[in-house]
Amino acid sequence: MRLASLAVLVPLLFGCLEDTPGYCERDEDCGANEFCRLPARSCAVGMRKIRCQTDADCQKINPNQLCLAPDCVDAIARGFFSGAQVVPPTCSPAEGTILFHLKPNNTELVYSLTHSVENPLAVRIHAGKQGETGLPIFELEKESGIVRTIRIAPDQLDELVKGNFYVNITSSSLPAGEVRAQIYSLLPGQSAGPKEFFAHLTPLQTPRVVRSMASGEAYISIDEGNGSIFYLIGHNLDNPISGIHIHRGSFNNEGPHIVDLPNDAPPEGVLSRSDIFAAERAFWPLLFKAGLAYFNFHTMNQSSGELRGQLLPYRTMPFAVAVPFNVKLEPEQVVAMSPVTSAAAGTAAFFLNADRTKLTWRLVHDALEPTGAKIYKGVRGQNGVAVCDLGPGTTKSQGTCDVKASGGPNDLIVDDLLRPGGGLYIQIQTRANPMGELRGQLVVPR
Image 1 (cartoon, rainbow, N blue to C red):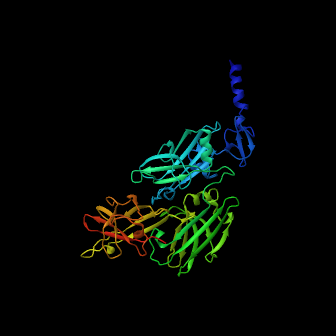
Image 2 (image 1 turned 60 degrees about the horizontal axis):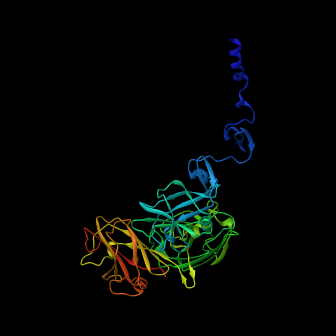
Image 3 (image 1 turned 180 degrees about the vertical axis):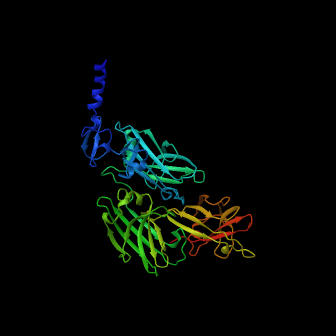
């Protein structure tokens, strides 16, 4: 009996493997430059395996990884969501990303989806290149923050890594698509998509609708191979420049810097990979392709930015580019028998597509009890007939108007839209002011 007890005690007293040098159960048992090799439970020199619960855990180390808990895995493709990629482009402020990981069997594709679309109707993968529309191929789950798996055929996988698929998120207000993400490969030698981008520089693209008569243009081309950006810029700013930056962000959103140019930057130049902010270097070409980059010119009078221009892909034959712009909504612009008394204010955002056939809109205002909103034909100081109904006029509402080359008095005609000084205006009616409480003239940047 005493011998049996002693046999039990000996391993407890002398066999404690946890005290053995080099023995481990987890990475933290090893040195700073070591990881725990399992199942051998021995420390070895090398990179520790990242344990994760969310994508954010992985992306602290590698922004092109996703979390298949408890392990981080590499993505083979990625897309960034923006309204600018939708056909026609939208004014939606929603953004997001989708990452794809291919399992070792080469038949299962894991996707990690995040987005800020309110009340999405559907999320689908479509066949189609940048700027094109195509048929849906896969139905994805629509909730943000999910990780799911779909089965994919070899030919579909080949099209995906070539950049010939996109993800579309639809909503009730924009059933053709509120935001879209073209899928681009992260594999070496698989770059695709637009390389040249253009921006109208205008105060009408600043979220605050700055009062300024300045304007300009910016052109860039990107070389993904050596990580360089060639640029051409021109403007007529009178105020001293206090900063020239390319930022990350969609239309009407503000974001961090991608690259800073000198205040006295020449009209033409080349930016190298070292000029790009470290936080964006892993995927900066994708941000340009997704319409998530904009020029911002800061001045002494307008420290937050006097000229801004969203960098968008364009066609050279013929030259065409989509145009985003804002319209300030004010009570004093309303033409009525007596001045409108209201403390309300707001902004109407517009995105005119490159073909000048669709005008997408979004309203943000603080007017109480709106009853309707319309676009009317008429110059500043005059009333006219309605050419597009914008529904009840509630804040954050959005939709699309058809633009015609010609038509009758109740049609939205492209010549009226592009008229210098603005040939159309938007007006919001409310219960307190049924003839109009907020109005703004549509002036398209040229």
